[in-house]
Image (cartoon, rainbow, N blue to C red; front, side, top):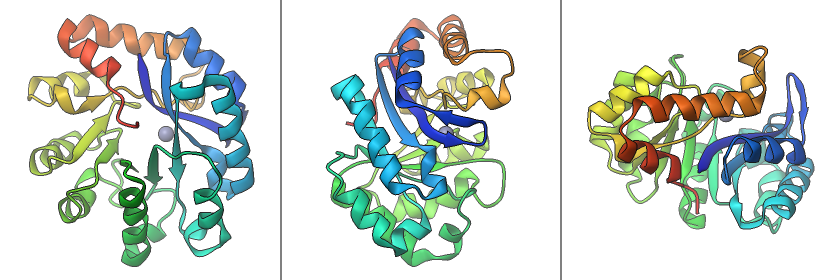
Length: 243
Ligand SMILES: [Zn+2]
């Protein structure tokens, strides 16, 4: 099974090492992950590259590194460093809630999309209920860049997510922190083939007290298995958007 939304690195609750994260997802039954480093938010580019190399040493081809871009990285030595780091990036990411400049600076946003295009990898965008990162805000970008695949992380708000999925064939949605009801609604409305599984591990530790990452991922998988048709479940759990 594939987890398309995993993190390593520094976060507000401390450090999540490549070793710990890889061990946890494996124990939960996941064999392949797409992963970005939260150390990016501290702009620790050299650390991010070290973390990715360490993770690849552990998981080899089962690791799909996602390059999390920041506006500051785009303006400094950071971008060049990341692109020449010998880490083969399988995706790029923008987080418009964490980095508000993306929304008002069209130039660097287009440059970020051009990186995805040049690397021939998908662009992961964080979506949320806040106006600055709601799903519909990305629709124009998806329409203007039909040759790039956009992945709407979390798929929020759900109604807007379904509109974007309908209007833009180049979009997918991941299930990270998505309520099971929303996954079922998406499947029900005919979007099962546009859904990829993601857990957001180990960020679950901040929100789901008392549950280990292993337990959290297992519970997500069990819930989906119980409620989806077996065909949809298998397809969603084995789909990898980052290759
Ligand atoms: Zn995340």
